[in-house]
Image (tube, rainbow, N blue to C red; front, side, top):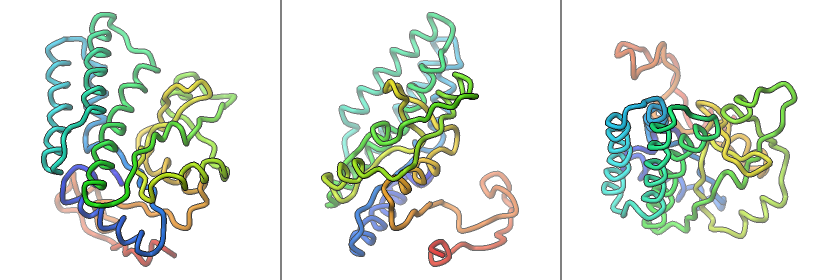
Length: 250
């Protein structure tokens, strides 16, 4: 599920319904999703501003987005997110002081969106009566070393192994039947956070589906099919072809 698909209570109710339906089919469910809509851009801007005032405004926006969604979902913001926000403030202060940002710092900050959103999602699903559990994608996806990749690409545009992983299968089988994890992030051989590049949540889901030998991979979106242009940017965009769930299975 992409950012727009996890940014409202209505969409989270839909996710809960999907999870319930798949469980009724006898499936174990791994939900992979993005940060809240626009959050990755906000986090990136946090690193690109040198003025403390602008950073503080950005931090307030990030906190408010998560507080609003938590309230709509009927859950507390939670200690995990409070700690993430405190860490973001510390890093932002360091960036303003030093005046530069390392690639590792950028990866650490930009991963916060997925970590916070999935914490909210897992707790909401549990509050709806589902046996749901949060999992850290960085313990499931490991970046591969690429001989010709720059250090920057290895951190901000990583590629992961997707060979079947029996150990991972067994580990997840011992957890709740509905697991919520992050798209976009993975870890390197030293355990450092790396990113898969923009749009990485679909890639993460595909990697995990392959590693777990999943029966089915579903990519959910908030638009009904293929348009002549981006309907969010072009109001006159025409729906060229609707995509139905049955077609996605073929």
